[in-house]
Image 1 (cartoon, rainbow, N blue to C red):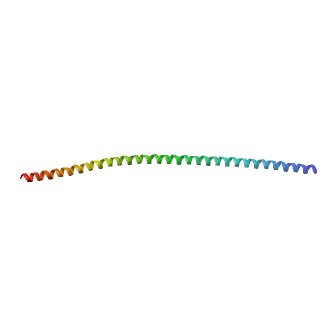
Image 2: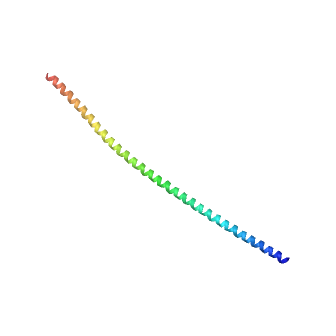
Image 3: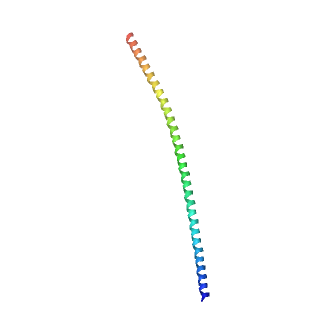
Length: 109
């Protein structure tokens, strides 16, 4: 009878040991899965940051390009404005000359 009790105790310990080993394996499996999820999350975060940076750089480049185009258009507009001012001045001078010529023709008649 004592032998049966010892045997039962050994079987119980073995069962506990097997169960403990299974629990340990499950914990290790969950720990590895959690580490993998954490690594994936960190990788996604790093990619998001790179994407944000790339988008920011692309937008900055587009903004610089737009500013350069605006500067070019402004220079062209200033050139046109200068030529227009010269044309208006020449037209005023021609009117004055025409007016003088008209007066001279009137004096000659």
